Image (tube, rainbow, N blue to C red):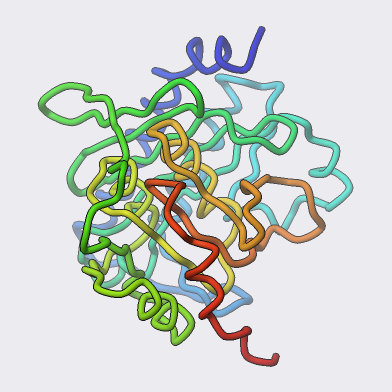
Length: 276
C-alpha cells in the first residue's frame, strides 16, 4: 500500500484519536491540576500523560505494526531500537504545556506519520476551540471545524507587511535580528504548533525558530504546511527529516508560507548562537 493510500485508510481513525486526546486534556484543563518537572525542567501535567496514554493505546490498536515515538515515552526507547523504525508515528500529546498552564488556550495535540524520515501525514487538534487541521504533503491540507472541512492554501505571494509568527514563550535576540532584516513586519505571538496552522491558512507568512525544538513539535505542522503549499527548511534550505539522527532535537529552522521569499538573505543578518 502506498503512503497516501495508507493515509486515506487511516485518516478518520487518527483524527478521532486526536479528538479523544483533546477531550482528556480539557477534562484536566477545567479543574485544578498538579505540575511536576521533567529532567530537563520542562513542565508536565496530568493532561500530558492522559493524552499520551490515550494516543498510544489508540494508535497501537489501529496500527499495531507501526511504533509510536511520543514525547512522554521517547526517553525509554533505546537509540538502536528507534533507528530501526522505518515507519513510525511521531506524537506530542500536549504541545504547549506552558500555554496550558497559563490557561490561554494555545496548546494542541500533534500526531504525524513518518516514513523513512519523511513526514507523510499530520494532524493538529486544538482542544479549546475544537478546530482540527490535517494534511499530507502533495495531497492538500484541510481545516475541520463546526462549519465543515475547508481546503487550506498559504498566502502566495506573501504580502506586505510580512506577517511573522512569533513564539509567546521562546522569543530571542536572533529572531529579532531576522525580523529587523525583513523590514516592516507585523508580528503575532502564538503558542504551540498553531503557528504552522496559521501559515497553512494564509494568516501568516513566516515562522522563524532559533534554539531547540523536538521532532514531535514540528512533524505534524510540517505535513500540514507542506500540504498547503509551504515549506519547513533548515538554514541550508533542506526540508526537515525525522528519526534520522542520534538526537531528537531539531536545529534552527524557518517555516515559510511562500517558499520563494528571500529567506537566505534574511538569515545572513542572524548572529551565531551564543556559546554554550
